[in-house]
Image (cartoon, rainbow, N blue to C red):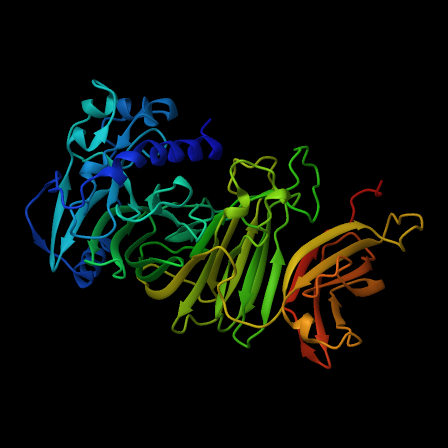
Length: 530
């Protein structure tokens, strides 16, 4: 079985092996790629292609000689390394060379690649020498058509230092998945073009990016523009990614979708991540590490200005949480805990980036929806976050969206509110008294600069809400270690039943909110606490 851990190892191997030659390459060496004849291309051309394709039956992207591709498993694929001397735009015409990635057992479908200069595009023609691989290996036995490219990776400029030995900063590989790095130069949370029927009884579809067109500006401050054609049984789309490499990675994404068949649940700007357990509750996890996750919560900025924080939970069953709003300013999957000692893992979970979506224009009424899938290991991506419109879609609909994705090491949205940095659960009751088998104790920590400026006697006030049950033993106190920027609130909840309870909490001073609002869905104890 191909696991997430295996996939990560494969992608890491591709980066590590190709690193040293890339940095040593002469900046102005001539291009060694072969190209087809030129054809006119711009975003309007792509949109016209997509409109025409929407009226035709779906045809999946071809797989070159499936018998050979199936032999290209992890052990084989890790030795098929993109040659930096054959990187697209590696000849000095642009600051960011682009590695073309080969097909394999994990990624068998092909993607056609084009280089764009001005208003002309030329297709990249495949040759085995684009890759460093064993002589007589499976890649050399594949026919040049369809070209066995599966995706691409944007690399750091050859004349720039590479942080922590990582060279790639954005990668498009597998179905419509893509990802980018933050300031710590590490991949983590993934995004994809759309999410179709995630978490419901109708089978989920995974449409593919089947064509990429790439254009680069001449300088470091110029963006890389990538155009992509999305194709699937129920949907076809035209995408434009304008990507900047600076403080982390910023993507300005414009998309036009044509609906072939009705889609029950269409997720826009979906993000996918892994969450096993955190400081909140370890549950049934038997692992020795204190925490294991690529993301630890969902941040939301509502149209009325409110900021929400929802810690992720390893639920005991598949759960979908909906957060409706008429004008989201932003939402995303965050990795707030940046302390190595909280993970103790050589993959450095504390360096995983946050991914933040900023809608551009009016998206209409809808909800941010969070899908949490039970897991017992870190090899599975079990978290999906996306925005879903309240308006049903039907065959023939044309949908236009634009948004920005910000890949950062910390929360990218502005604001002076203190952030929730920890959520801890335990058995209720006053400390030192017998532990309750009914009460659940919650301990929240909020961190921000506002606390240091308040009078020592001006204690924040807790604002608590629950959909059912009662609160008791409420305590608000500064951090015991003297951190002036940290306040802690403790409270016990009597859920008064076994159904899930929705909770909200923030700290205020004289009716002014000092923190974002913590939201949580608590499932009462299934058995007495021990």
